[in-house]
Length: 114
Length: 92
Image 1 (cartoon, rainbow over the protein chains, first blue to last red):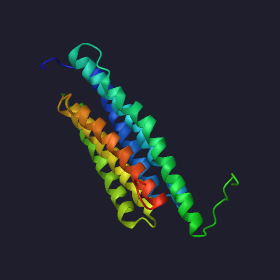
Image 2 (cartoon, each protein chain N blue to C red; image 1 turned 30 degrees about the horizontal axis):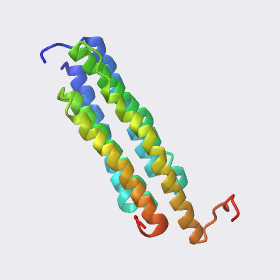
Image 3 (tube, each protein chain N blue to C red; image 1 turned 120 degrees about the vertical axis):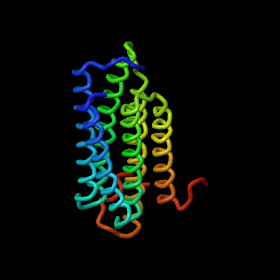
Image 4 (cartoon, rainbow over the protein chains, first blue to last red; image 1 turned 30 degrees about the vertical axis):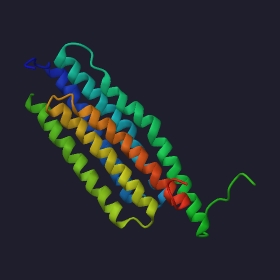
């Protein structure tokens, strides 16, 4: 692997990587600063969507330029995250709703009766 | 690898490290159990992204399987912890 990558592709890759790092920092600031659990649940989605997509695109661009042919398998990871992250966070939100209702916190009542 | 890209990789890994330490603060301090699960999920996510960035740094294609496995483990562990918080046990 002694092939060199063109400079503009390296610039694009660097830009995407730094963008994902900043998205991850914003998500961490949201996790630290937001006041309640239900607000905090929103923050990691930034790192999970924008961060992982930009890292995957950077990986695809870099390895495609390195090997001279399209290398697309890194895109599997953000697809997988897009399938699994909402599932986990909805389960977590339901668990939090259930537990806060059990504790008698000020939470909206369930919509379904029965 | 040009100096531009190695500086960008270093800055990105630094951002991830700061984000992960903020996540650890939430993990240790979180008022409720759900906050801790959320922070753990965030740590999984950042570790996986850092692994992908290291894959670019060392021009190695071997890390994608590991990143894929970490993403799957993050989903499964968060779902299992949420189920535990909801019902008191994981498998009924």
